[in-house]
Amino acid sequence: MNALARPEVDGILPGPALTEAISVARHKGNRSTPTHIAQALATMGLQVEHPTDDDLVRAAELIEISDDNPGPPPPHSGRHATLSLGDALILAVTERLGCMVLTRDGYWKWMVDEGHLRVQVAIP
Image (cartoon, rainbow, N blue to C red):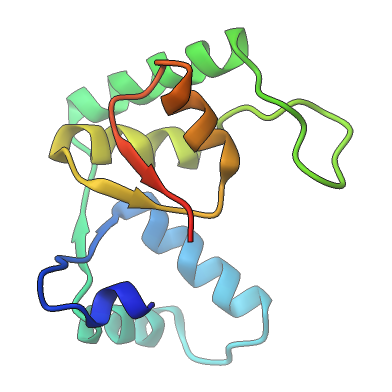
């Protein structure tokens, strides 16, 4: 979250990423309510950007592209990497906004390097 402390950074959280962040936090033992977690993220300056109808269509396209172009298997996995529905929605929103994506998902970077995504991906 150090990136959010930089004044030149506008933190945008695609709607599906908010759901995922809440789910992961709760799964890892955060006992705050989902509403409180969402409020805490907003307090940190994150703005939620919901998918548009065009984003929903682009996400479907990205899933098809991903299925046709699976990436190298991630560590500790026996299957090739592809996009989940949530991943595709997040990427569709960030493509529309033209913003950089901060992720630990190496497949997203691989998809950019292969020319399948129109975003910049930074892996911390």
